Image (cartoon, rainbow, N blue to C red; front, side, top):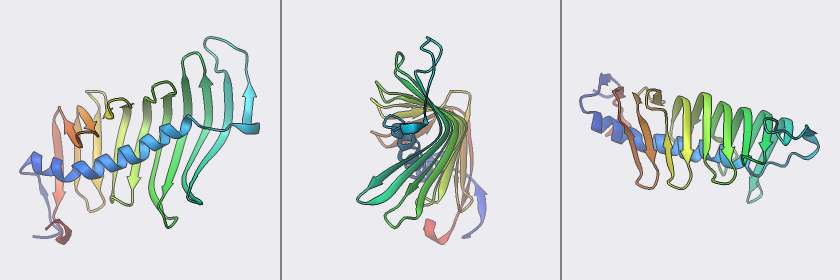
Length: 205
């Protein structure tokens, strides 16, 4: 009956129903977060430090980076600290938080992570530490301990043993290990054990 939660009888069905929301949340939000790091304008927030193999070339504290599109704010990224390492082509963000806005100015997607390592030469990224993204548009969220983005192949993965959780606002959820999102093929897969709950509503018909 509509509105009653029940255990998944077919993993394929649950995976298919959640594939698109998960893809939009992660690719449309987390990737925007890390790509924003490559064009940060530190301005007066720059703090010079001694050049060293283990020290950043530049450091910015308490940054707020805004991206406007068609005269409106489309993305706002905040971080308590941003470090640039020229030799290794890396930008490291600490306590990153971002909000993506829709055409009406309302929050479309919001996410946070303790650490983001962005590779400026390849546009690959590692995102770690209480990773959480919620999409109002897709009415769902994604949580993970760590995720890795490979820009060339457009593939997002989590370490094999770690669990990635996908939850819809209606209560449906999917949790499993061996997560891989292939955004060229538009596929989301879990190679390890997966569990989930599917909530039937009138919208699911």
